[in-house]
Image (cartoon, rainbow, N blue to C red; front, top):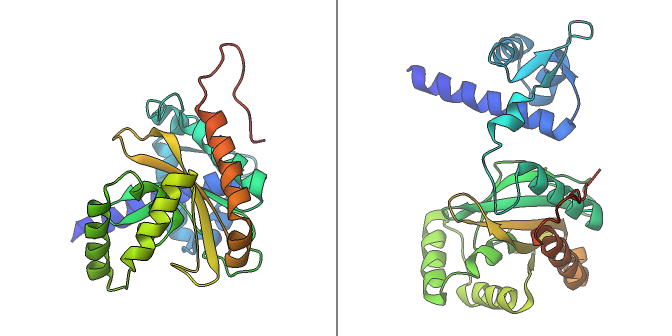
Length: 260
């Protein structure tokens, strides 16, 4: 019976670290507990453990917590092509700033697209699902998924769509899916509106870099359906420009562009 407790503790530890990534500043015990919906006593024990392990530090004067440099050092070996985690986070932030919409870096997770980094904007014209790292979207029902599927054969895509429909018990229009994928191959970007969630759409492009397992990384932004329908070409071209600039080999002595 100990295993569920351990899994829950691991989940909460990661939620604390992702919360700091979202707020990007020190925070108090009470604020962290309230933001994550936990009892203060439980949050206190977890934060103390993370401090003991070197992942967090506590200011003795303000009693606020913040991550330590152990976190960026821990993942320093993980790269996508020439890019490390900081460069990828900067790219997502640039997409958010360039479009004004929530921007997401995602990867394939079986039959879903999984968000791995999010720069979230205030929802305008639709009810936001408040996307966060770890969020899953059906690969056959979102623009990020269309970009991932664009590298597969048509036979493989049809097979995957039928399997996804059976597993999720949701209708997937295969001819419509294939039309989206073919458009993505031709245009270099994918888009959809109202396909997965009514009132919401997204526009996506694939990075030239893959993750350490050779899986595609996709950059996308989400907005109200009518915005995506009217401006998908403009948004897609802007994302393509960002990705092309990101993928150029760095010039020695010239710093990478910053999103801040």
